[in-house]
Amino acid sequence: MRGPACRGDGFVNRVLPLVGAGVLIGGLLVWLVLAPGTAPVAEPAAPMPVAGHEASHALKTTPVAFDGEVASVAWNVSGRTLGASVRVDGGARFQWTTLGSDRVRTLQSPPGATLSAVAWHPIDFLVLGIDGELSFAQLPGDAAVGLFGKGAVEGRVSDPKVSAEHTFVVFVSATDTGHLLYAWDPNRAATPELLLRTGSTLAQPAVSPDESVFVFVKDGELWRLPVGGEPALLHGGATASGPAFVRGGEALVFLRQDVDDSWDLCELSVAGGEARCFAEDVRRPADQIGVSAAGDWVAYTRPDQREILLWNLLEEREVAIPVSEASPHSPVLVRSGDETRLAYVAEVEGRATALYADVRPLLTP
Image (tube, rainbow, N blue to C red; front, side, top):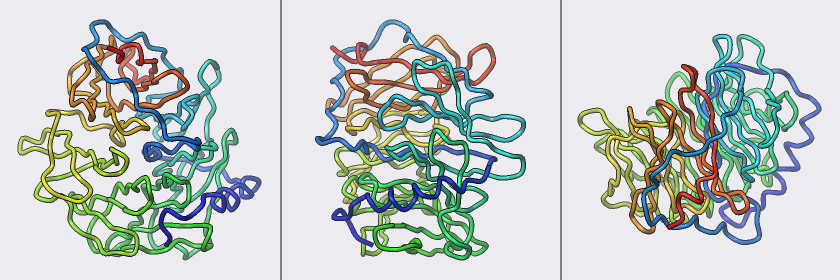
């Protein structure tokens, strides 16, 4: 498949006509949000303000009345819509709300089906795995349709992600004998291209901002696959999780399991070398690490602590933002106008609830 020269127009044009043929879906939802910096703007996103101090007061948050126990949250690219994986009636549904509105919308989910993962495109359509099939849903609609005919993909689809230039979708598929890594460029083909077949376990693919390199977890280790090249081990010897590109695609952040089963947050050059860990005893998020669009801030939490922690990769300093709710986890960041919006999940009156706030004033020295 092609690299950064591709355009995303064909992707949009191919999937949008499918909306009218929607079918209802449902089941389990695991979030995988777009790679950092995917907003379709004329210039790169400006970095968030550099932290010069540690915040000393609790964050003023707004809770969202999603209908059920929230597992994880994700922003759309503009930061004006917040979506959530919500556990309801023994299953899970995708729900979303526009900030400032009291209305919560739901992607309808009949019993029995499974919804394995979601990637959120900038013009508010979702690419998702439904009963192991790659499918598409246009918001604010409540239905989804399959993207390919029977037999186009082997196995059951999971972990889809839309590339930074919105050119293609990369996803993993599981079979009885192993896993496969696919990418689909609608500018070139009606069906996806098989990039890698292995008897090992594949998960959590990520795409570099220039769309030239794929990174994924294989049997718990980090691997890279350049477009048109061969896979190579990036980091082995310890279980890795949740890779995300930072520093304009020059590096990755990921979670590394320690010998005592705790998780460290580490940074690694895409070229390889030694990983540098900058946070210990990190709580593993429900989906992926919260990285800012500019790739300069990383958000995380620690077990049994009522605070959101943000690490500035450029200044190498940590900012702690106290919160009043118990068990905060899975923080995600987005820039929206002059605001730096943080969303996370925490216990409110014994229920897992989504909350959000503008943290820019707390990050400004």
